[in-house]
Image (tube, rainbow, N blue to C red; front, side, top):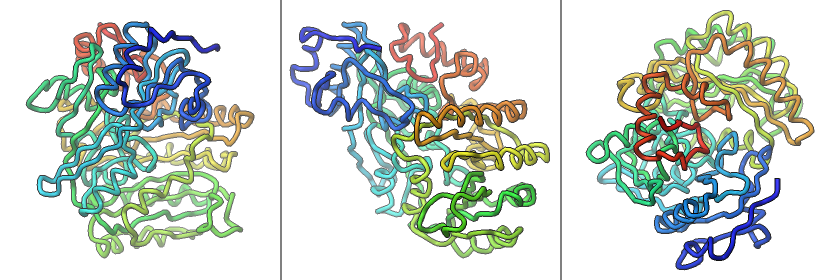
Length: 464
C-alpha cells in the first residue's frame, strides 16, 4: 500500500511549537520509528508524531481530526496484532514520554505512557516496592495496564489495573481530563480493562506493593515425555496454594542460552516457571515437592533479585521476530486438557514457538468484585497464550498453522478471553471477551467519550 501524503498546511498544528519530533516518509528516523516489536507487522504511516508531552498529544489529535487521518496510539509498541501503528494515518507515539516519579511515603508512583515495564521496576525496586505487571521488560505499561496486566505477582497483589489510583487522559475532542474513583468515575471504570477506546492516557498513578528485592524464582524443565505426569502433579500443587506463589507452566523447545546445557538445547520440554513473592525460605519449602516430580532436566529456580527474574522471558520475545498468537481463559486443568497439551507440546517445530498458561485463579484478582472494573476474567484458573513465532516471514505460515491446530482443540474448553492477548478477531470475539452486560456498558461509555470512534485501532468497542 502506498503512503498517503500530507501538506505543510495539514501539519501546521504539529510544526508550530511541537516539542517532540514529526517524521514523514523519507525523513531521517522514519524507517526506525515506523517499525514495531512484531516483525510480522509492516505499516507505513503518513505521519509519526513523537510526543514530548500532553500538549503534543493534543496537537496530534487536532491534526488527525482536521485531516481525517486514521489514528494509532503507541506506547511500548507491543500490540500483538500491530494496533499501535497504521498505514496512511498518524501514529501518536508516546514512547518519548518516559517520566517516572516514586513517592515512597505515599507508596505511589506516577508514570508517563511511554514507560516500559523494566523501567518502572528499576525505579520502584529502589524502594523495595513494585507495581504488579507483565513478564517481558520491554512491554509498555500503557497497553498492558488498560487491558488488565497479569504476571508473576498477580495472585499476591492483583492485576496491574487493580493498582490504578488515577489516569490523565486526552479525549477525542482534545481535552485533558482526570479520572479516578472521585472524578469521572465511569470513565475510570472503563479504562480499567476497556483498553484505549476512550482516549489517550498520558499518565498513570499506581499504588505500590512491597516486593523483594529478592524472590525465589526461575524455571524447572522436564522432558516433554513427562508432561502428563508433571501437569497432574502441578494441578494439585497449585490448588489452594499460598498467594505468594506465582507460576506459569508452558511448553517449547529448550532455548539456546548459556544457562541451558548444549546437549539440551532444542529438545522439546515442559517448563514450570516459579516466582515466590514472599519469604524465600517459605518458598523453598513449598517448591521442594515440585523439584522431586519426575526427572527434571534443569532446575534454575533459586533466590535472585526480582528485576533479574522479570527479564526471564525477554530472550524469548525479541524485537523484530514474527509473532502470531491465540489465547483463551480456561478453568482447572482437566485430564482431557492435560492430554491435549502433552500432544501438542511434542508438535512444536520452531525453536522460538511456545504455549504458556498463567495461573491466575484463587488469588487477589478474584477478591475484587467483577463489576468493579471493565476487566473480565477474574475467576478463570489459567490464561493460555499460544505463541506461533518465527525468525522469518517464510517460516511463519507453518507456525500460524500449528497455532490454529492447538487453538481449535483448546477453544471448546475456553471460559473467556484476555483482551491483551487477542489478535484482530472481530467485534464478536471482543463482545464475548467482555460479556454482553459489560460490553453494553462499555458501548455507552464509548458513545459518550468517542462517538465517532476516532480511537478504533484497539480491541474496539463500537459506539452504540
